[in-house]
Image (cartoon, rainbow over all chains, first blue to last red; front, side):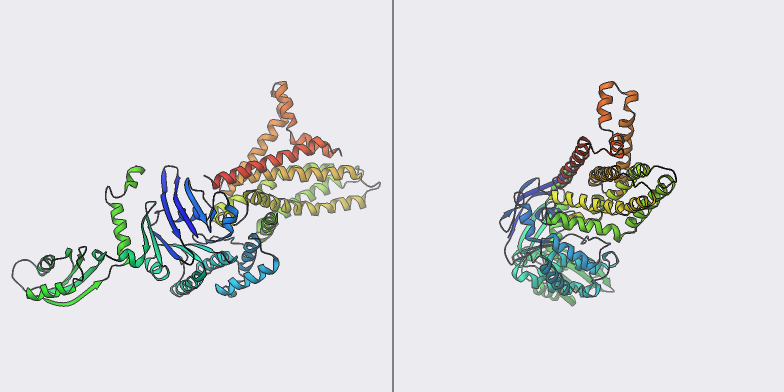
Length: 331
Length: 240
């Protein structure tokens, strides 16, 4: 439904997007992740026809965005970042205007405006000026506007921005419901949010796609992303502090990539442990090693590989010299 | 066509949702009303609206840019341009819709001045000659359209309304000055050319009650030219 082939976009000397390709199929909910400035919004703006790519092809439901732009745009419901809307208009009037802009006749306008207002819980603010609405309601007006023409493709840029936790939950439910018969592309930097809603994630950094796939696939085989926390009391040997002894003890365990002291309570040391790739579950080896060394463990738990850790690792490789050629080119 | 209408109606209505629309209309009517009372409606004076049309035309100079300045700038500044430009409407429809919306507002501004015609008709004997009045209103409409199209171009080039206003006003003043004074300083061939571009000279013809096809074509063509430039500017923004 959304086909993106090798698109690129520069603003002056800044190469915001450089050779991005992906597909999002019917009924799929894909999350576009990336740090600020990774090129997410620029990518979405190209997909929705607001910005033309310098190179590459975008197709929406098979329609080429460059050749059949108006037809392609008709298939998309787009919520731009921070949901801009005419602040002097009443919420209902704004939605009516948008519906007419999409070419609906009078009867369809009334029916659809009523429907999306119900769906997004806008009844109480129908006759309020958009400029006087809270950020959460404004966001919902934007979402309602994106749903008006019952589009096949939904593109949402930071849809939960500015919502409170209850509203985020409601928005999440709504998006899941909408996704049943639609293609949805959501950008966000709230990772747990994406994990809950999306079947699939596309991670961008420095204008490129760095990872693309189902969350479970991306995390499979990356047990080096697992992290362990242990609170340990080493046997006093009179040499060095309890902290140093604890870290040393843990470091010696096979499969431990790194260990560092993360706080102390008297003789108890808190140690954070990162695993090597293929290390498997390290909880047992840690417990066994501690027992052998005569140390006591009063807490031991593992953080499974998470999207957040994967994301952070991608960000880290971006920042190391040579990892991100972006810096070189921007200099 | 439908999209042009939808956009135009929204623009027109939004002038009245904001205080600025009412203030502009009130100011225009106050000033033209003063002209009418002080210079037109005088005992012994010939029944003619000539001085009213003269002033009404000059007053458009600051008013038309005030109307046009927000049409595109505000969309760019507030980000609503993104919603508009990703809707299934062509750039041409957006430009025409904005122009028509501003034009409708200027029409709403001129409409109440018809009261002056009625009052003058009632107060004078013999009744005023309708020719110059029709020609005078035609000149107001044509000048409004031209100023508006120039202002629309300025508005499409910046997200700053003030800059769009000052740019349009300054541009108009410079054009008026250069074309009106050309005979004094330019070589003959250039002076002729510049004189042909003089808006006040053409407005003067209308004021005499003469509807010259050449004058009408001049205003319509110039307006169309600036609308095309605006269309190109909007498109280039999208394709930058």
